[in-house]
Image 1 (cartoon, rainbow, N blue to C red):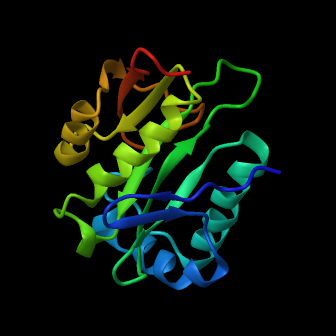
Image 2: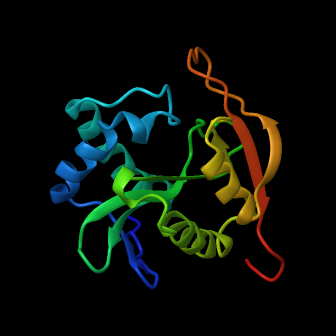
Length: 179
């Protein structure tokens, strides 16, 4: 079973989720502003957040990678999540997809860039290529992805039966000298 590595930055601790994170996680994922560019843009009910917590915790033992809870090192508060997921079944070509989300109060302070820098440094040791999928309306996340080396890759292929909005795909090759 893969242990979730702890990543630290000047202001953040990226760590595995804990049961006591549920309250902060439920508040974040039920906030319409947090979810407006994620999935179908709908706030999550408590039971859906509970399922999400279990799902993201399950990435690590199955895939050897996943999402980290982002903790503000100064306050100890959960302020978001960032990491890698695999949204396609193992019968298809698999490429880890980077993702990040921050609580509304944590935005605009450079935390997302700090967290993405940390996860990509970890990922560059393991993956030749990563992707990310972003709403075309989410200008801050698109800018963040581009600053971190992601380039446009067209319209994202969504799962069969998807009825939500279209998303843009971005891809990033690991820098030379890694892996």
